[in-house]
Length: 390
Image 1 (spheres, rainbow, N blue to C red):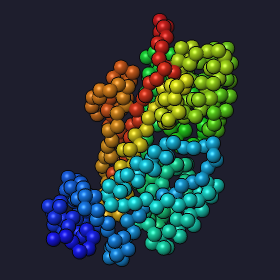
Image 2: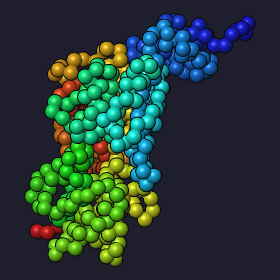
Image 3: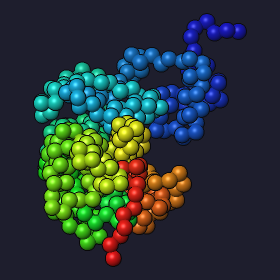
């Protein structure tokens, strides 16, 4: 006989072949349910069209099942495809665990103003926060941590000791792979175009370039820095190419700066990849566009989104280990340059990033921190191999 009301917990439990309590656990405490069972219950929920009563559940559990994420308005010409993809990844990961993401805004110029966060907490509108685009001395992490508010950041706090939980990308390892890739192609004058010192992300990437050049016995004097823009990348690349002994490769801190560097190369009627190699970082959509075809470094944003949500829900469930515990947070995105992958946990940096695809495990000292290795994506801006000097 057809049900007189809409789908219920009982109808979901019958379709999934589990108890009513298991369905309730999937909705209210998914971390208690085995992944395969959770997926079966979620499939049943979709099949019968069950919609939980959020208000009733909030009153019962005193939880909103909402995770707050601040979207910072920026200039129209500063669209950030990395954070756009990260937001999609976080939203998908949260929904798979029965949560939703609540977006709110705060002016970029008032990053130290926590009134928007305070208002959401006072109204019990969210259970915790997801942060991104962290900077050195970022006040958000310290403010939330000091009040015991659950949060996880995409990005380190860049302090000693680190504050709160975070998931980040090993920019230094990514830049090291870039230098190795260029060195194997015969480049010995490898320049760096970066952001001004003091940027946690920028300094991390610069460190990777510096250490890799020193490991190969190369000069680290070929570098220039400026604020993020295409015009800045073009200007800095021009200054480097005007040197009496110009670089044969330009390693850029971002894809946006690299696009400017490509323009500077073409301004001299030189061919990117043939006369001067150019690389970026982030593997944004513009990197693969015809006429750009930029070798870049891809961040594992889907994995980042999943790990951010996992750490935050662990914190909400009070199941995360103490930050003082001696433990390891491991990750396994590929540093790949081909379709095949092999696993290696013995070396942080593979000997040949151009010829092999390696999976590196990066560890941190705390179970609250996850550091992921990015992937080198070679394209025509670095294709030719120079004659290696003897």
